[in-house]
Image (cartoon, rainbow, N blue to C red; front, side, top):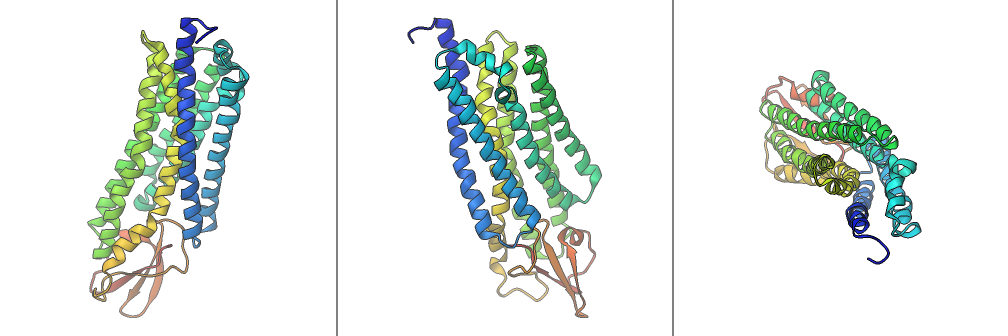
Length: 333
């Protein structure tokens, strides 16, 4: 590259390279997210207003994040100040949109983590289970806020320490959240009195890990590369920029995949309803819904024709015998 020294050329490759690659992957994942959101609003018209609003906010935040990334960061780095690596490096402390970029990523991740915490609450009904995990995510967000302050004050050692605290908390929280959710689904599956209900819960267990794995893996790589600033090859630390850019999209996609998988899971589980006994659960189109498989409502009809509606998680602890009750799922489609 003409006009720059060998050292500056190396800086350009390691600093701007991850920005460019991360931006391209972010753009592809934004397209995936657009398709998921479109499918959601098309297929799940019976979902509650709160859940539909949460999806809309998720999409809007990710759209603004991509706009900030391309219009501010990449345009200024690669167009306005092309080749001026020292200026670009200085923006990490002077440009608010650059300084706050990791914090924006952390906020988007926290938004999705709150949703998955509500799912854990739905299957556990125990604040002593959900509370510590939620507090771990809150600590991760606060750690990134403190790290953002140290970015602006150019205290690199503190930045590295707080990034480590943030990313390790995110990774640990995701793993614990997934494992705990799976545990309660397995425990509930063993206590239900319906074959199809057990099939429904069994289908939710792999979904829990499928949606948690991609962001957790990227958070792990992000943590590893963020700590390379301490080593004899600090330039490798800039690689974490690329991983950090795609993290919010992976979280958003995991949430949307969970919501959009409900129709396929319900169809798979209810496929054998023909020919089942009257004591087996039958699935039907919803009249009311609140938006999640675990959060769906069930209709319990006893032999005395007394009908009451309870949350599906209440059924998990019920003691009705198979001979006395039959269950009809009327969860949202």
